Image (cartoon, rainbow, N blue to C red; front, side, top):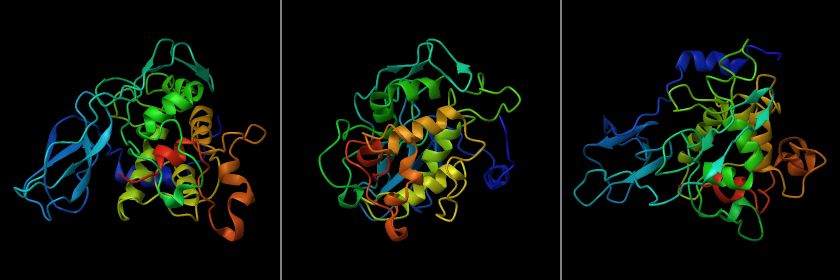
Length: 287
């Protein structure tokens, strides 16, 4: 696999892979709108009802949010009671990687490979997320939606981890980590999308150019000026999963058209996400 030491590697080297995902780690509240990936926040907060994203649901890697309660402190991490996705990667392979029997849970209640270290949230898409219909997984978080609607691509992604990189010569290049301590490419990208969404009001949707930039830099930047798709360092499994998430459901001739087809960027303005995609229903909609 060819590898360019591109800007995202430099930026990641500066920031470190600081997305260490651990359960129930407490961090003093800064009231800045983010608990930090993998942390729950304690301490005073205001105003009542304010949401802060970044806590991790117990027993999984799904990132959710906390709410400022009447007592002026953040409550427990808001996690779905039962949302286990249920996809399995049994023997799937892509880009030379295989990991027969790896389970991809995507769950708030089940630990192990396949959960989200940077869940793209829940809820149906908002008015700027695309016209028409509601997808079959509108109530799912991003990783659960992917494990259901993009099962083959998800299985191939789950087969690539820090123990099974597709090219042993580049051990840091794989799709999904086993426990989030060394996030894979899809986790870094989804965390980039989540961070961009958190900058706007509730219901904000990350548009195509922002998502493409997060992918182009492997999560290092959401600046739309980064527009190369797909970057050389991205594994085939990561690329295929991103394309399944974002391409129109009937797109078969040109995978990746969501990022490269000019008709999706008329006059430089990103078109709304297509209906029935995880990009519309789960992966780009704000908490």
